[in-house]
Image (cartoon, rainbow, N blue to C red; front, side):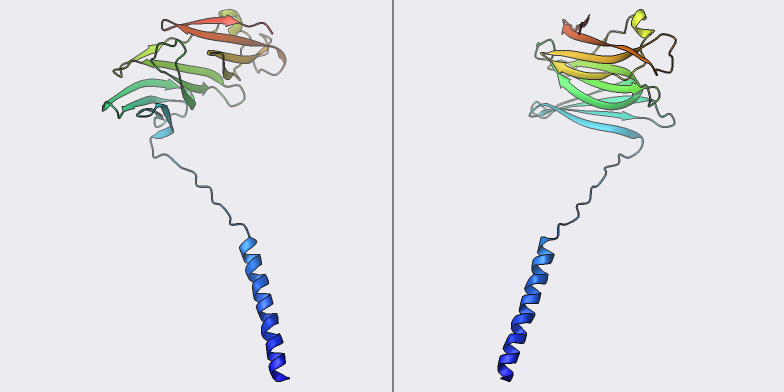
Amino acid sequence: MNLLRIFFGLTIAAGFAACSWDKSEKQPEEKKVTEIKLPQPFRFHKMVEVKPGLTFDVLSWGRGAEFIGGLLILRSDSVHTRYRSVTDELEGRLIDAWNMDMDSDGHPEIFVQAFSGDEGRPSLNLLVYEFNSSGSAQKLHFPDLSSGTKRHYRGRDSLYVKDGSLMRQFPLFEEADTAGVKLSGKKLLEYRLRGNSFSVKEIEE
């Protein structure tokens, strides 16, 4: 009788232990998200891979001023062991960088997107550099808005690519509405690149 009680006692204890083990196994582990902070004076970094062995590291840097600084593009061609760099002045907060070959000449263009102004109505600042096979860079002029459009422009641009063209869309406001509160319309512009020169066309919607 005592042996039977001991047997049942061990069975129940083993059952509780198994339940506790299953419960602990099913509990999800908390994933810790680690934010990578760049060392000063760097503010932004993005690696843009054009093809295996050819990468561009785009960085912004500077001390003292929040929206004025420097731009640094590092070109690494590990296949041909060629390494070049480009430096430029940067106005605005760098938020993105990407690669395109809009004119289909085999030479990549690195687009650097920054926003200047306050958070409520940031203005677009786009810098474009074309790199040839030897690594030399040429800065391409991105067209300014017309004087008529500037009177109604308050920033808040969005960019996307469609059929090899760069599309730029932004809201329009009354000229007297300098705060950009009352929306009066929107504008969609299409940019194409031929012979290292941009053309711009307004798209009717």
